[in-house]
Image 1 (tube, rainbow, N blue to C red):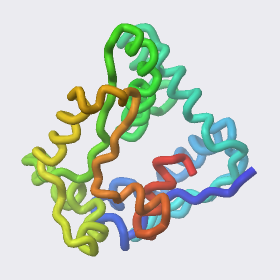
Image 2: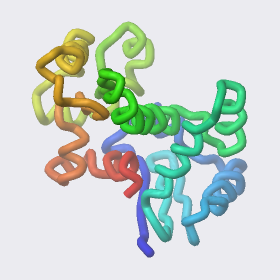
Image 3: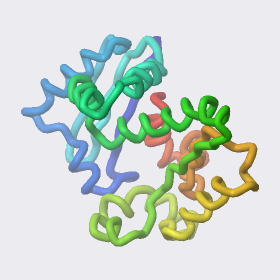
Image 4: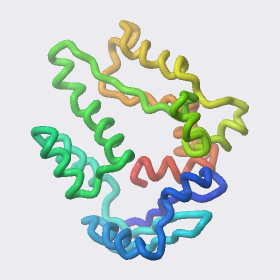
Length: 207
């Protein structure tokens, strides 16, 4: 049994993102109900203010989410997949991203037997026209990290280079991996070398 904390706060996330993840008083019972329905979560506390949203939870195991994702990937067609995500409350960006990562990892062996490699990248904030249209949220993410490191958000070309590498003969021994192309943000959060990224890293790793 472990106690975990997952959340965002105003020092390390743009206000627009905080606004999107905040839980109103009206929505609180529904949010707590969804937490209560999680099979390996025995207790939970939800804290949501204008400057932070955090969940404190007592969990039995961390990684049962993998089995749930595999169940989703086993759906036989589009319609059944849609029904599954609706039933399980997984029709969101993070859940579908996790499913894509699991798909890449799960297909490494069967595709390799056919002479096919499969890899993907997990990019950090990238300066595109779409990102500019949602600048505060998309390009605001990790801005504190980039500011201290003295770098800008990635360009599309900088995200294309890793894809070219993964598709080239130079990467012939690499398959089934998700290459994180975020200028070290995730790694710095995991190791604690940049504490501002630790909460996000823990959330993505189900810690």
